[in-house]
Image (cartoon, rainbow, N blue to C red; front, top):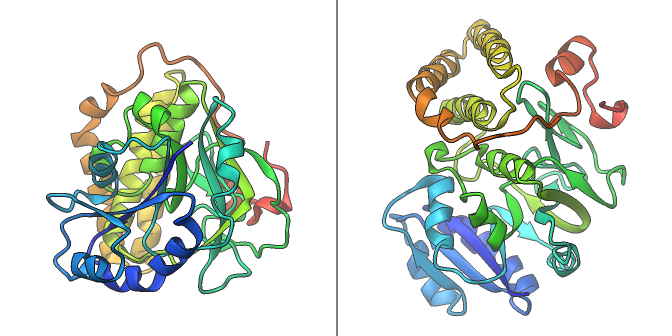
Length: 333
């Protein structure tokens, strides 16, 4: 089973200098390492050519973002397993070891490691933590992170188990299954495309797993900062795309209506906090969603069966009303 580690880069020379050494040290004997460059205008490529001659460089013609950037880069690779790794991730010894064992099961399409915070290593990291889920309205959350509450890693999520979605910060995915479901949706550009991908795996009767036997440390916000209105826009719009494309048709439009209303509450909250650009980002996200509604609806898989995809009806209700801010504080049904 051949493994390719692919790091998507855009003007990230400093991140490559800081984090690529750990990837080379802990991966080069087990995998071929690639850097897929999204037409950087800094000296990323020169740096790689001068310091890492064994790392193969894939040059994309422009900044395609995460989704299409990876689609372009992966289209020419033949390794059995793709490891999609953010440029701001430090890996650890043995991080690739679980891959061969887990992917021996032909039903497993993707795997996520334990993702800890690089700057606060005793805590989980926002983007993925110990594996992701969504509620019935499409709101994502993780074991170890619900909205902005992040848990310390106290061994509560050790072991291996199925999850609903795996983080794009460090995503192990089988090449065959990645292309079977169509790869990433390039209309997302960035953010939540991994949830869309994993939801399509789910609808194709494939599985996504979490393993604590592999550990990485993620900085987060290396390319697009957490407080960026652009990030707000992409997250809100793409989450609506996820529901429209992948949720069962039964109650689909009721779910969308409730979700749009809750997004409106979030927009008003931003307004009350005087975060006018984030308020505008949510309005913009809805306008973009309406604009692309028909084209996104056409991407739904024909004959999509009813399958329960969620653990809890509303994580918003659990978190903001019942004040259950940690996954480990209650059993989500």
